Length: 335
Image 1 (tube, rainbow, N blue to C red):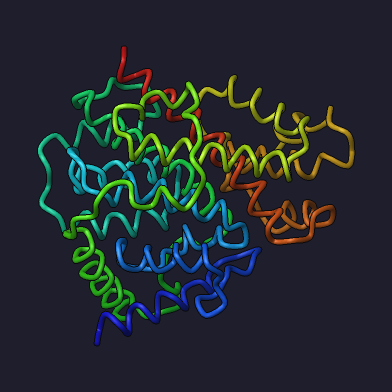
Image 2 (cartoon, rainbow, N blue to C red):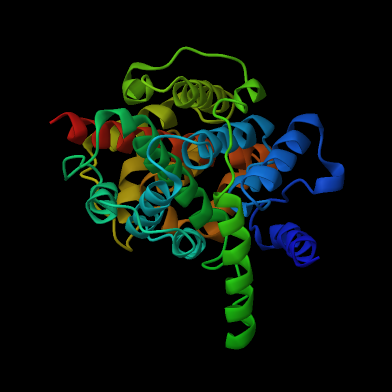
């Protein structure tokens, strides 16, 4: 009974999503409904960080596939070590929502050996060598890439906590404990790798995802997600904007951009006026998602008012940053 009540409450937590209207469960089409059902069964909840992608079903499928095949599916690294990576990356990206959720899950699991150096590696963005066997790289780099993507989307579309900030401390504490138990139950289930891959068409694994090649389920997930991201970018993000984001990512030192948005205004000055709003939103989504506010979204919506376009642009930009971070983390592992 408590699980059913919490599941219903978690479905209502989609009301927290900002800027877009996520697809509701009764209205979900075939692909969205399949993802929602799988997520509730295998992850333990209809997670808003994934469900917020639902106005763009391919982005939703890709985001769930990455999460499912790295964090959720059974593998050699173990769920606790993967939760440690998720928490460390989320902390490095200043994503308090994800830190809160995955810290709760981590507290329900036995502390794995070597978790501290693995967490330090994950949070370093590639500044530390990988302290784990090469066979675990597809899972652990994969979790890091997944959360570099999800953290950026959460910073844009969700509040700082999965719980209402106005709730009394006792209510928040009780809800946190119940959610922790619910997530803890889900983490103990054995999920067979690869079952989500049918959600999107097969695709070739890009060269910069070579770190995933040793685990077919992880490689398949990221190959499909990369193809979905490139298709979304081609539909929604003007080519000059895509080129600008790629150039900025290539020269980025991995450190936070700070609170000023002056760097964005300088970067988009060379774009045609009609593309500057898209350029501003894409750059912020990739490099400083915490700086995206209502005015940045409104400027983009002036040109592209539909929810799908907003999700596709931010999905492409966040994924582009995540794949760059994955390449850096993998390079640290090979050094």
